[in-house]
Image (cartoon, rainbow, N blue to C red; front, top):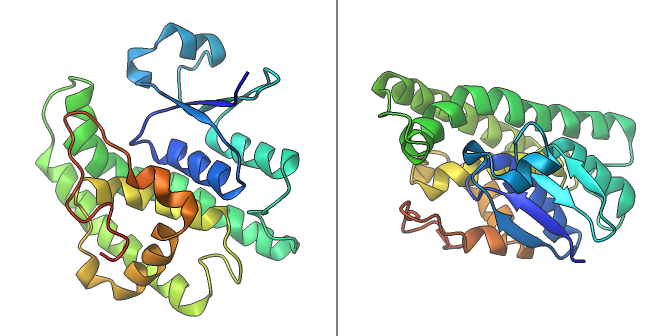
Length: 223
């Protein structure tokens, strides 16, 4: 049996796991899944009906993006994505929590969800006030990314970590729908260009969501 990942293309949590798998050189068959439809196979694997869900070749099932990433770190220690030093590891985890928590609630939910996901779920039209708030929050978060990238080699320190992948996962979803004005954030753009040019990012750049065309520059590593 091959390794399988039940995932939705425009989920930042699924994208984070895909990046971690690719960076570690672990092949995977992607099973495109719309979690809001609660497909039987997904619910059988995860009663919460949420993606991502990783199914290993031996049948091991791992649920939740951070649980999957921690599992991958322990099961496949090659190309580690968490630093060895405890303080550096704590900083990487802090930033993962920042992007998966605060960025998600302040930006992703108010831009991606309102502009795309509500339509895909047939859940009514977008709320223009939420979109305005999300756009303002995105500017503040991109400034924070630029500050981190200016002070460090990567967001959490000297080495590439899950923090970079968590940030890139969320931002790439917004970049897919053309919500990022990169010209206003050269520091964040320089960091994102480094991530975007990594081999691990290639599968994300080839994503195509039916009915949701990618922005013209999305797959261009020299954007």
